[in-house]
Length: 419
Image (cartoon, rainbow, N blue to C red; front, side, top):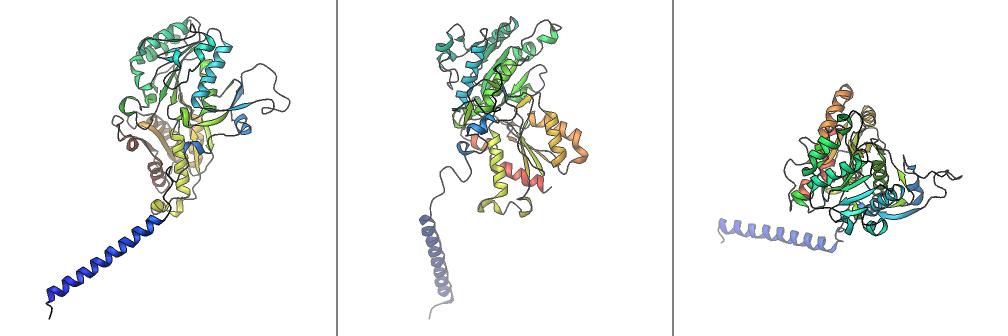
């Protein structure tokens, strides 16, 4: 007869065999299913509904104002106008070409711009307008900013490029202590309103601590400067032309990952879009989601996840919040930001989530949260929530975990809606 110990061992072996057989069958079944799409289940930039892919939609962009002096077409804003498929860097190049055609004093300068620039935004401008108007500078950000200030003070339209916004800090003194203050300092006798400083900004996925920073928050207290961040080609062209025409110095930060990935039908004529004016992209009634630049697309994906969470996330998204109406706002101009549009939205929705790639401490979200809390405190249903990068240098191999993704934004939406 078998001992009790031997019987227990036989039973354990039978149980283990059954578990292994079940696991094997599950593995085989899973391998026979279609693999998940390589791009994931969320829409990518190329297919985002926020990008306008038709002529009619592009020409009806809110706030669009034509710069030509000719009379409008009898058929209205759409009739007689053309568009062309462009990515963001092509739209920026097109804007600078228009500016230089309209203004003989306009010059473009910076590191490698005569060769087209690192991101090709100035491609062909030197051949089109001559190397006296499109020229390279030494590798000196402070010198580029100072030279631009001098040009603008003498009446020229100066379009400077800082090759990466990560390297704008050597120019910080020139921009904050000189460009921002010269009109006040001179009692209005001088100004450098014709200075526009372009610079690639935000993450690229592998830029790390020196090529993926978002330094817009450092300028939030620099009265006299404007800071603008576009979200795509149409916005980039219109906002850049508006920045060049604005009577104040402007820092124009271009999200570098959007240079090629964001594509729209862009009007070929010269036009502007309003500065210091936020745009409501999707109206809502239950929560305001505020951001700018690349995170606009992350925010939109998070809203889609809230409505239709995939099985892996469904248990974390209560049924009660899936029908929530989210108002998505693109701030566009960071300094000075559109307080009234944001306050109006929050008074309606009673909740606010602010999203940006820079760290939380000293970020733009801190200033926005402060102002909204001061003005809307008694109407708020939940504290203002910030979704940001971590307060560390942007890590190289871990950049994906540093930049807020759609799941982190979704978590904040659920937390705020269920507060």
